[in-house]
Structures are given as structure tokens and as C-alpha cells.
Image 1 (cartoon, rainbow, N blue to C red):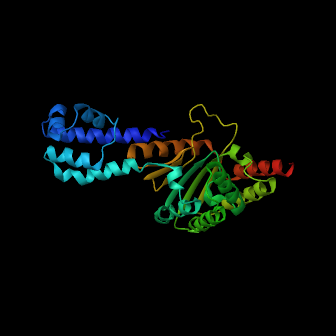
Image 2: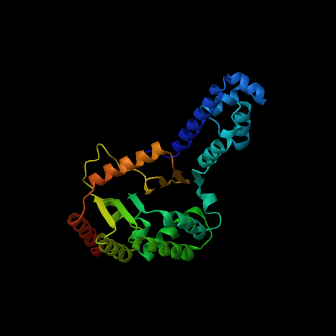
Image 3: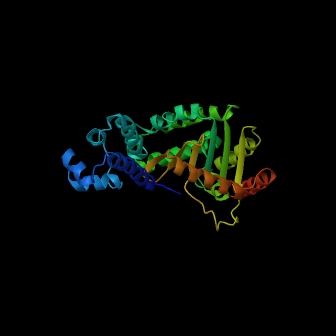
Amino acid sequence: MPTSSSIAEARRALGQRLRKVREDHGLSATELARRCGWDRAKISRIENGHSPAGPEAIRTWVRVCGAPERADELVEAARSIESMYTEWRLLESRGLRPAQDGVRPLWARTREFKSYAQNLIPGPLQTEEYTRNVLRGIQQRRGLSDDVEEAAGSRVERQQFFSDKTKKFAFVLEETLLYRRIATPEVMTEQLGQLLQAIVQPNALIGIIPRDADRSRMPAVEDFWVFDGRQVNVELVSAHLTVKQRYEVDLYLNDFTRLKELAVHGGQVFTILAEALRSYAQT
């Protein structure tokens, strides 16, 4: 699965588009560099994706190549690339609540959600106390200001989208995350009980990949969300990754299909959850 390599791949793709503009105008890289007043190596770095192409450089490039009408689309592509990778320190600079609020427009316009999780139970399925423990851990680990209560409230409010019958959700969870002690046994028991209730919700499909599943062809990967098959969000250790390139979105969609095929559904999910609940009762 792609992670931060998405940035390099996107830059290479943009570089190839700029190279085509140059070649269509019949300019060598050396001649383009001379006319732009740049070092020849700059052209090579941009075309091969080794350096980002900024708006000013792109506008100069296409103007010299006699294709100024291409500027806006290529500048927009470059800006999209740079916004793919957002460090948590920037995203959460004003606290956890603004970061939670920031995704509401995306959730409001999305009609079909796909979620894979091996680390944490996905937000729409979380109890408020489980959410509070997750956010408290993030706040303490990243040294953020304490707005955990407000952030938890924002995430709980966002669960209204899960109740919207015009939206469809498909979740694939690793069985191991049911045993990941995010909170006390009492909170975990409540959380698994909420999962049991969510299974029967008509607009949601919940599958669980058993711990003993054959992973030879499809290992566990990072948690991710797919929105309407057009955008993927991935939470990395240091940053939030947004993937929109068709090729990479398709990679995530294909892996989601494989993961879903590994999962059990229906009655077998109840059996797995019941076993996990028994483990907390014995704690």
C-alpha cells in the first residue's frame, strides 16, 4: 500500500506532464532552462519528480513553451500534491477539536464509505468513552493543548452521518483490535456491545478478519478510509495522508476488496465478538 511514496509518485506524474509540454513545443531541457534563466539540473529534478514544481515555476515553464493556457490546471495539480501530506503538528496546531471539525464537510458530501482498521475501532462505531480515551492518548502523546472533551463531542456529533440511511458504510476490522486495551475492561465491554448493535444497522456492513486467517496474499496494512471511491485518508505516525490519484485510490480499493474477502460476516461476527466480550469479563 502506498504511504508517503504517494507524494513522490504524484510529483513524478506532474513532472511527466510538464515534460510533455516542453517536448510538444520542441524545446530541449537545456534550451528551456536557458530561456527560463534556470540551471539545467532544475528541469531534470522537476521532470523526474525529485523537486516540487511551485506555481511560479509552472507559470514560467508553460509561458516559455507557448502554452500559458495550461498554467491553471498544472498549478492546481501541484497544489493538490503538496496538500496530500499534512503533518499532525500543523493539522492539530489549534487543538484536536478544530481537526475533528475539519473533516465534517467531507463526511457530509460522501455517500459511500469504506473503512479498514487494525489499530482502532473506526470513529462511527466508537462509544463516547472509547473516543475520549483514544483522543486523550493522542493529546498526551503529541503534547497538545487539552481540548479532549470538545474534540470527543465533535466526533460524537459526526456519528449522525452513520445514522443517515442515504449513506452506506462498509467496515473491515482485524479481530486483534478487539483485544487492544484502549481503555478499562468496562469501557471495552461497552464498546464491543455497541459493535454488536451496529451489525444490524441496515446501511452498514461489518466484517471481521479472524486472527487465524491466511495472510499469505494480503497482510494487515495501515488503517484507511475510502470516500465515494475517489479519496483515501490514511493516518500515518507523523502525518495525515490524502490520496486522490486514480491509480493509487484503485490500489486501496483493490486491497479493501481482498481484506473484505478475508473477513467473516453475519453470525460469525457475533461469535467473534462474544469471545472477546468473555475475555474482558474474566479480567
